[in-house]
Length: 299
Image 1 (cartoon, rainbow, N blue to C red):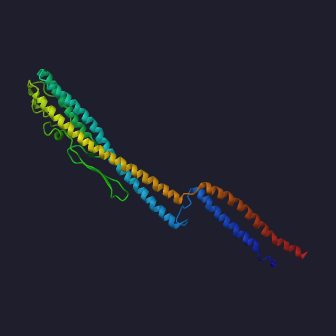
Image 2: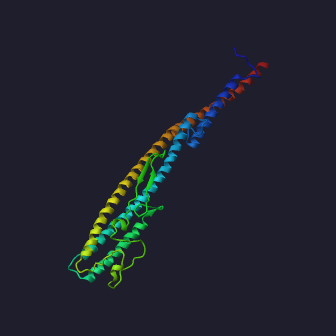
Image 3: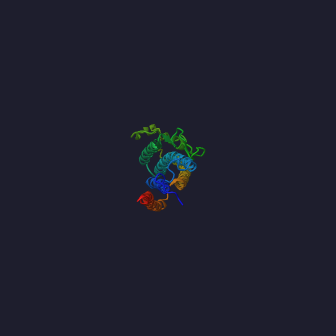
């Protein structure tokens, strides 16, 4: 038979212990619901927390990778946009040279075509000089390679090499242009003073215009080949950006699986623990009242 004592109430102590445990569990569940995390700090689960921190660091590193790749993409996009303008200008220059090579037109018309040709050449030079992003110009005379970071450890690089597509290069010295203000040829016989075309086209035969046409054809081939390589490089950057994005998604999903709380499960646990808490309070109240029975023994 259990001993009855007013000094020691074993039932109340047990009820109090159970109630305290319930309240501790309730606090854990409420914290998970508030933060959305089942592991918010190292004290929740040190090993899992450490793994999650490592994965978070790698995911953060991939942000820097994305920034580097996007910078390279912007350089290449600028270059390709400029390339579209350059090919359009070259096609217009070709039309002028082809028209001027016709032996059936007079020298006045041929000189006019030359004037338009020179202005287009100046536009070409201006586009090349303007084709820079963040200080990098992949097609001007000076070298401007790009090498974007492609992985979190920095070992993978996505590069694009400089290709000189300025007028001096693509016209093989037969057309010299510097960016700046367009200067029209003189109205007199001094058309040959225009540095872009050393020999005036007004030769009565169209031979010099035909020579310019050959230069333009060579330039078109060189420019399109250069732009083709930039297009391949741009695709490589896009592919790497896609891969980095998928890696980040995978890492973030993995981190979530490790530390995120299942809110539906926690909601169910909250209701169960609240009910358990209420029952614990009642159990403690009943246990505390048991000592009052001893008063009846002394009546």
